[in-house]
Image (cartoon, rainbow, N blue to C red):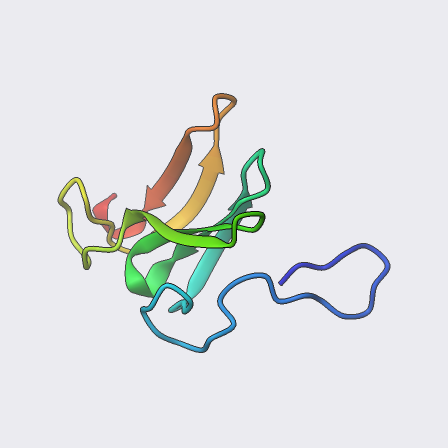
Length: 98
């Protein structure tokens, strides 16, 4: 949800299609961060992936994980938190992979 200051209702930005694992669904979203271009990134804990919604281009993509839970280079196991550095590199806390 996006809440604009001094409004009484929020706006659904991403994940309004119910629980699931399609590109328009989330399963236990746990963290959100916005990049410098306004794209929304969500740590999708239950689907073991990080999703990106590019608001301007209306594109949805998996940017990390999405290959089931695990410890391989292309897998996450319960992504927990997200952050960007000054060069706009995305960092993901991968809870079960320590």
